[in-house]
Each structure stands twice: as C-alpha cells, then as structure tokens.
Image (cartoon, rainbow, N blue to C red; front, side, top):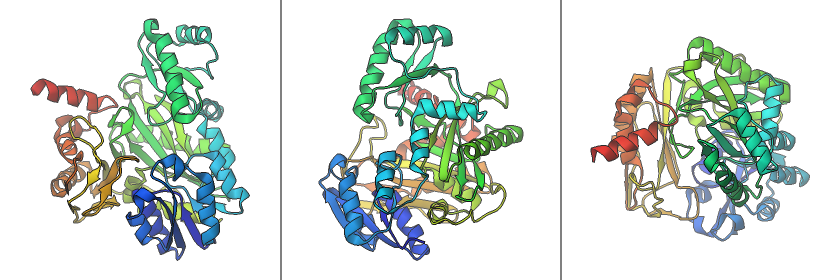
Length: 452
C-alpha cells in the first residue's frame, strides 16, 4: 500500500479524497494556486505546496509543478480527482514514469476511451449499441456526404471533447458548414485538438449513466445507474439514482451490457459509461456516448444508495486489492444530488466574490460535500461549483420532499448562487413526476419567461 497521496485538484473533491485517505491511514499532500492559499483542502491536508499563480494552466494544469510537489514532499501516489488533469493520459504516464502510483485506470485505457471516435469503435466491438455516425471528418465534402447518409438533425462532437465544448446541433444542410467550422475552432481552443465527428442527433432523450468498477484481478461489476437528464448546455445540474425512466428489464440489460463492455477492454478502477436513452423506442434503445475514466461529480448518489465509498474503492484498487464486495449491490432507497454553483439564479452568469455568511443544511438523509465557509473568497479562475447537496429517502417522493426541505435551509450570502433556481426546479410538477429529459431546463426557463 502506498503511504502518502498527492491530490492534484482543489475544492470539494480534494476534501473528499482527503477524507477517504484519512480513514485508510494515508497521509495527504494538497497542491494549490496562490488564489487558493486559504482553501480548506490546504488546511486539512497533512502537507500543502503552492504550485503557481491563479490561472489553472500555470497551477492545476502544470504537470512539472505537480510532479515537483510530489518529489519534495515524498508523496508516492497521485489522485487526480475530476476535471483538470483527471483524464489526461499524458499526465498519468508521467506519474508512472516518475515511479509514483497513479490512482486511476491504466493510461492506455484512458487514451483509448478519451478519444470519442476510438471509444465508439471499442464499444461497438464489445456489442454496445452506438448511434449512426462517422470517424474523424477530414474534409467538408466528407462531412456533407456523411450527413446525407445519417440524416438530419445531427450533432457535431469533438473527439477529445467534454462538457458541451466543441458540440453543435445541426438541423439542416444550410448551417452545416458554418457549424462544422465553429465546432473545430471550439475544439482546438478547449482541447488543442480540432478533430470532430458527427452522429445522429436524438431529440429529447434521457441521459443515463452506469457506474462501473474493476480491479487488477479480473473482477468487474456495476453499481447501478444514475439519471443525469437535467442539464443546461450539456452541463449536469441534478443527478439521481436509480432512474425512474427504466423498467427492471431495461435496467438489467443496460447494466449487464456495461459490465461486459469494461470486461472486454480490461478496465481497472472506477469509471462511468454514459448513454442516451429513447424510452419510446423500448427497453433496448440505449446508445453509448462516452466513458469517463475517473470519479464523477455525481458519484455521491451511488454511494448513498449502495453504502459503498467509491473513493476508498479507487484507492484500494490502485494498491492492488480486490473489490471489497461480491455480486451486484441493489440500490436501497433513492438519492438525488443538486449542484450548488456561484452564479446568478436567472442568467446563470458566474458570480465570484466573498461569502459573508453560510448555513449548511443537515438532518437525517442529508449530505453536503463542500469547500466553502463564511468569509471564503470564491475565485473567478475556476469552475463555479460551491457545493453538492445530496439527499436520500426510502423512495423518490421521500427524497424529493427531503431535498425541498434541505434547499430551504441552505443559505449563502455575499454572492449569488443557484439555490433559488433549484427551489423552483424541484417544485416543478414534471420534476416531481419524473417526467423530464435533456431539454427540461430549456422548457422550464421558457415557461418562466412567458409567465413573467
């Protein structure tokens, strides 16, 4: 077992990893930019190293600085959290070349699944359904020919993409060339890679993902699915487990398919397979989108319904242990997570600044993963996530009621947050009924605009 873990991240996920390490008796090293010198992950780690100025490219994305921090503190392993370098295969390779343990899947698998075109091919070979689409588009002529074959509407995606960047929906041929160029430019700016591909666009799908896990001893399992359909501009806002959209038959088919897929590629560590689902087409209408080779922001809802600490599992797998459980874990009750962001609740514009007062909700079945505190200065340089509010109930109606109560207790003063937005969302009749898809937020916002 490694002894000292460097956490190459910040915010709530850095604190989350620190907690799991502490419970395993592991020492921790946090890294931070100068903007985060007063952050809680700096305070609660055993050691901390400043790795650069506020811009992430000069700090949290600075691989030489991170490796140097590991060397001077004697860290023997690196946990990347999520975001930043978490899915960067080059970083994982550098970590391993320096004699450190990479707490994640093998870099070769990260490289395979990080390329959306190669990942589609690998999943198709494993028998996982994929939407009609293309490989990397080299020319505009090739793109138009593919569009005629697939049919409109279609969606352009960056091969190295994520978070909605480099993604464009095309309704017809008139705007295709312009959207193709825009997608390439966005992909180059975001990922330093302009490659894109296209696939059939699914209108109003459900976004369902399966939490998977595998060890170095050939054991693979799923931990159930999560519903992630409530999102804005392809960014998830609410996640829950299990999904109310699935029948028992659909759930079994999907989860078995996910386990077969990771077994075929020899996956190790925790990961997530993401799918689009068209319920009106039947229990088989699942289409692979991508695989995230890291811990997810929304791993918490899976933890709440399974009782399993996923970060602990991740650490133990990296140390060479077998999975700590046998057989599939059936979900107990229902869990919902909402992401609390520093942003205007109406316009969604980022809202950094000083938090002058904060009250965190509590009580039975309520969990809050956060790094904020009174007088904390929210920096403008990073993601706007302030906290994750997670609730658990005996069933979905009980979880929704508990979520409403917890949101009413959540107070953040001094800056604007989306707490008020979530209060409106969880009171919406369609959310209460579980009747939503990936277009729900846009429709809800349009309803409110008309009412105003």
